[in-house]
Length: 255
Image 1 (cartoon, rainbow, N blue to C red):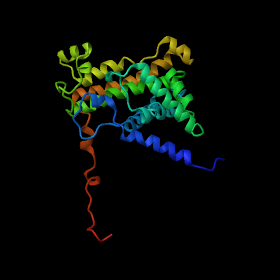
Image 2 (cartoon, rainbow, N blue to C red):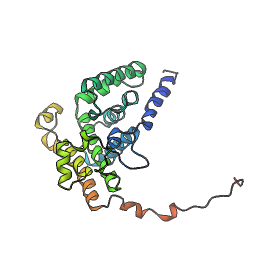
Image 3 (tube, rainbow, N blue to C red):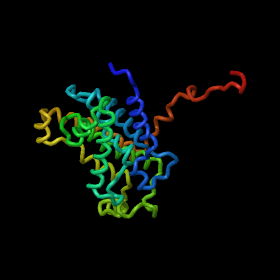
Image 4 (cartoon, helix red, strand yellow):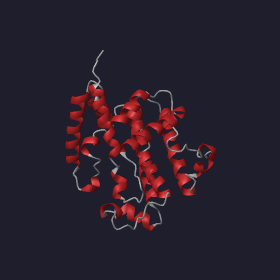
């Protein structure tokens, strides 16, 4: 058995950098909030959504694979930063630096995790688990903006929002129709929650199994959106036991 834990600790510290990296989307939309979601928050949310929905998914899913995909899929951003296509960085340039980051992680920490294999399989959607994570990832992008919108933290008239976002034809048209940013993100990302007949064949699953997975993920997203519309997303906070939120403190020097 390997005795040194040096690489384990170093990899943990690379992952820890994601806790200081705010996700770029909310920054580009200039969300007015004291604390914005960071990439580590995003990863934890994907794990939690998948864990919550696990009882509804078919039994054929390998959760070790799912959690590896979730943990690793954005880890290169600890090195490259969270790059979006709206910052003027060409796709080929993003691919170049991402590949360099993956090569570094794999060379440095391959004995801990197979980064090239895990991230490569995720990007290629080689199995059903990678497809599930990708769909949950899309849903989470919309739920994040639903949360911020429900807190009244998004001003679509903010002049600091970059024009390439604010005046995208679909976005501008939707806003003119009275829709907000959360509506737009929901409508765009829910379309990605689907499994084609070709993918059923690729993943060796029945149409029934595919439909079950899609219905579960869409069901979660649809309920989130419904509660956004009803403005009930935060109602549960009112049910917290007050006794658990009130406690006495000892005076200093008495510990």
